[in-house]
Every structure is written in structure tokens, then in C-alpha cells.
Length: 328
Image (tube, rainbow, N blue to C red; front, side, top):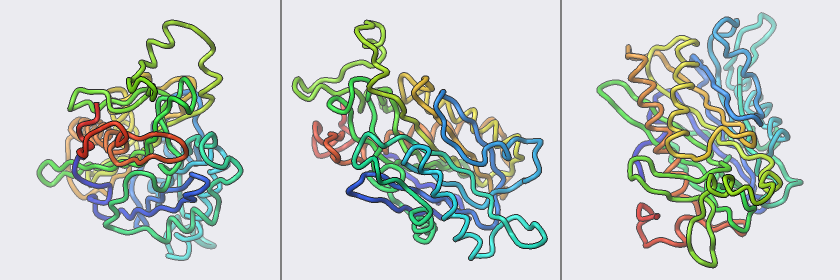
């Protein structure tokens, strides 16, 4: 496992709520004092909320929370629960007659695992926010990662369980951290270790199959098995950044996806990365972006290493020695 957690950036609280039977959940990232934010959305099937306001030219400069959630588009209801909790805390954008918490978010598609009729809603979003802590170390089958899976080109019989992953990197006073809810169509690699760690898995023969090679063979319409997937993430940093800078960091952070997921940003993904900046430390934007991509890649690996078998899906731990880092 790679070290560090999202909340290593001060001012961030993280909480989760899930339905372990229905296999879906929500993760709430709270920054009630207000963090500068940006986003970059790739892939052709995104499900998002309040991303337009993060464009550099738009009015609102800071957000008060972000949510990552399962449930496909239904899961967007969870955002209202975060707003309610933050309003009760007195956090939000002053509109004269009251406050409006600014809470962007993104969804992943987990309806094909567990009970598709149970989705994150207002109450689950509120519960995730209520549980938010400054020292959260949750990884694996929790929150937005509860029903997450990878390697789905041949359907669930060949897919593997994934989940939530976190990590952080410190260079001097600069801290860059991330959380990833990993729910990709493609195969997963530990970039720094140089090996495949999850993806399309032939349980009978105990071997990995290659998603790109299957596409190249054009044996069938693989899209019937993978209508929607999506990996969603938050990068946090204590660097002093503008909204435009945060959008750029989100763009650069997608390099972490490209290093660790293959294929990525497909027609069946809605890959999204938010960036939150507290503004405490002067830092070179290029360095922040480089570290953002690195921590995203590490959090992807941790999402695999910490996942456990669930919903009929096998995890990395099924076919490895006691050390998850031996996945290969």
C-alpha cells in the first residue's frame, strides 16, 4: 500500500456512508471554510453536479464540499444531504437572505452490482457528511467504492472488485493528496511497480485477459457488457491556486489515470477529477500537477490493494500471497 490520506491536507474532512447489502455508497469531502476548486471531466458518459460554476470566469470562487457517489445519475441526490449538513454548520456562499453551500459532485455506475433499486440519496449524503472526520483513513469497499469494479468488458463473470483508494505526497511544506473511487472499464496497473494488478480476470484459468486486445479482436459488441463505468476522484493540496490553476491541476492529474488504467476515458467512462486548494503554501503549478498525477496513480493502486471480494466479484486478495503488494 502507498502511504498517506486525503485529509493530510489540513481543512479537509472525509466521511462515508454505504449500503453493504445493496452495494452502493457515498463519500463526502468537506471543506467548510471554503477551498478554491477546479474540475476536469473526460470520457463520454459523465454524471456531474455544479461543474460549470468551477469554470474560471464564473462567479463563485470557493466550494464547501465535494461528493463522490455510486448510483449513476440517481446518486446525484446525495449532494442535497451534504448541502443540508453544511448549512447547519453555517458554511456556504452568502446570498444576503441566507447561505448556499457550494457542493459539486460526480457519480459512478454501480447499478450492475448489488441491488439496482437502492441508490444513494439525500439521507445517505447527509450521513456521509455527518461522519466526516479530519483523520479518515477509509479505503476499500466503503463509500463511493462500495459497489465499484474494474475490467468489465466481458461482464461481471470476468470483472474484479475495486473500491476507494487514498494517498498523499509531501515535498517540503507542500502537500498533495487524493481519493479515488475506482470503477473503470479497463485494466488496472500499479504504475510504479510496473505490473498489472486487476482487470479482466479468467477465474477458471487464473489469468488476466487484456481489454485492449479483446477490442482489437472485434469478436463481438463488448459495449453490451459495459454501458457505464467511471472513475471519480478528488485531489487536495495546501498550495495557493486560482480556479484556473485548479482546473489545470485536474487536467494534469488525469495523467495518473492514463498511467494506471488502460483503456481510459472511453465512451463508457465519465472520468472526473476535482481539485481543492486551501491556499496555505506558495508552490510551482507544474510541481503540484506532477504530484497530483502521482498521487492519483497511487490511490488507484490502493483502491485495488484494499478491496475485498463482494457481490460475486473477486478481489486482488483472492489470487495473491498474504501481501497485497504481490498482486500480479
